[in-house]
Image (cartoon, rainbow over all chains, first blue to last red; front, side):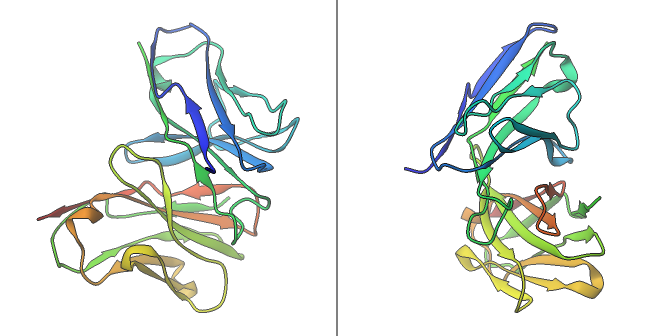
Length: 116
Length: 113
């Protein structure tokens, strides 16, 4: 089954404690992206990647890091989480160009992060 | 840079009522337009998309949307909503077939049985 898998689904942590949210896709997609979803603000893009070792900043990259060492994985890293990073995070993947007609983005089930 | 506005943040309707959710974008060039739906506790799913051709596009579950270029709008419609349509709806734009998909703030729809 084609899917984007994120882990964990829920995470509660404290300020400053480094964490990683994993994302894996089994569709051989070149394009992967991370979004955060906040009430009234919709989804805002954090980082995206067009292929292995190619990453670019989205609209809200501050406080986040990503890596793309393998095509299927695109982890999101928070080196020093802060309370304003409390949010719902979604990973997505697709073929290039992003959101092409025959290959819209596939989303993971989300990770709800709380930073206290 | 492109941006997307959804002016209705919350909409409450009774079953069988007609639905129209507004979406306006700001970008002067070629755009691809999408509506995604997020049912409670689930991830986003594509509802419909517009790339070119007929500006009236039909999606799944009886939804349709009309692209009006002169108004920079891509409103979502459904003639008769059902309780199962309760969800949050997001409009999104991809400019010039680039690699960023920009979402609106979302509209939370509640359909009363």
